[in-house]
Length: 541
Image: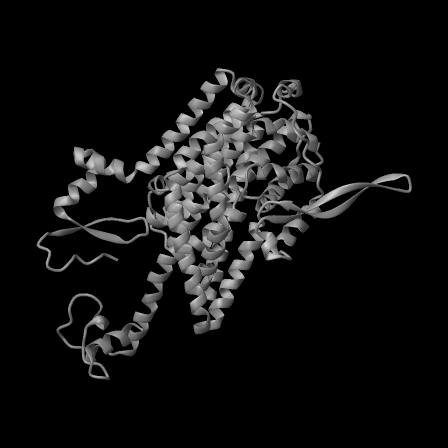
C-alpha cells in the first residue's frame, strides 16, 4: 500500500522505505537525501533529530547519571553518612515518579482493554488472543531453557562454600515463606475471578499458613488472606469480558464504548505529560537504590558470577532471540523497532515494574512503531500480566544456582520440572518489583531444594530484577509488533479470494476491450444501477 501524493503539488515524489507498520509513504525527491542521510546531513537535520529524540536521550543519560551519582554517594559514605531522613529525601523524586505511574495503571488497563475488546470482532479477538498467548508461551519457554543452559555451563554456584558469610555483611534479609505448589496455582485461579472488583484495584488474594498442634504434631494449615497489591490479572480478565459484552449489545453499547475510549485517550494525554518527568525520576530511583546497598563491591565479588549469568541470559534473549523471531516473521529491522521503545525500556530499568512502564510503552509503540491502537491497548496489558520472560530466565538460573550451592545434582526430570514450573509460575508473577522472587519458592519446592536459600540472591535482586523488567516489557512490545504484522498480512490476503471469486463469475468477454493496467474488475464501468461507483463497489465486496 503506497500513499498517493497530494494533488496540485509540483514536487515529484518517490516511494520511501516502508514504515514500521508496513505502509509505504511517498517522500519528495528533494528530501530523499535527507531521509536517507538521517541526522548527519546538516546542522539543521542534527538539531531536528535531537529534538525528535530528546526524551530518549534524556532517559538514557538519566540512567547513566543515576549509576554514577549512586556510586559517588556510596563512595562518600552512602546511607550511613546521609542518615534515614536525608536518604528518604534523596530518593523522593524517584518515589514521585513511581506514584505517578501507578496512579495511571488502573484507568489505563481497564479502559484500554474494554475499548480494545469492544472494537474487535469476537472471532478476531479470539485469534489475536490465541496468537499472543502462543507467542508469550514460546518465548517464555525459550527464556527458561536459556537460563538453565547458561547456569549449567557457567556453574555460578559451584565455588560458593562460604557465601553465607559474604552476603551476611549486607544486612538481614527476611526468609521467603514456603508455599505449596497447589496453593500457588489455586491462588492464581482465584485472582483471575475476583470476588470484589473494588478491592481488586488495590488487593489480591494469597494463601498463608498457620502452625497448629493436632495430636501432638505441628500441622501447617492454609488460610486465605488479602495482601496489598493490585490484582491486575483479575482486572484484565474482567475488562476483556466486559468489552465483549458491550460489543454484543450492538447500538445500545456504543455510547459506553465511546466513553471508555475517550477516557483512555485522556489518560494517554496524562501519560505524555508524565513522560517528561521520567528522566528525573529514573535518575534518583537508580541512584537511591545503589546508595541503599551497604557494600556494592562485596556483593559483586561474592555473587558476581550469578549476576553475570542472569544479565548475560537477559542480553542474549533480548538482543538476539526476540529480534530474530521478529525478523523471521516480519522481515523488518528489529533494532529499529527497539530504538522506538528505548524510553519505556529505560523506564522499566528505573522503576523495576512492568505495570508501571505500561503507559509509556503504549504511547511509544503506537506513535513510533506504527502499532494500531486497538492492538496495542489489547495486547500490552495482557503481556504485562502474563509475559514474564525475564522472570522465567532468572528463576531458572536461581534454581540451578541454589542446587549447585547445596551440591545437589539435577537429572533430566528435575531440569524439565524447572522449565515447566518456571514457565507456569511466571504467569502468576506480579508485575511489581521483586515479583519473580515471590514465585521462586514454587520452583524450589517442586525440586526439593531449601527455600531459605532465596535470601542469598536477594542481595543482588535489585539489579537482576531491573534487567528482568526490561526483558519483560521488550517481549510485550515485540509481541504487539508481530500481531500488527499478522493483522496486516491477514487483511491483505482476505481481499484476494474475493476478487478471484468475482472474476470467475464475470466472463471476460463482457468487459470493455480498452481495460487499463491492473485488475480489470476494478475498471469503472456501468453497473446494474447504471453507476460506475456501484459497479466498482460490487466487484470487491
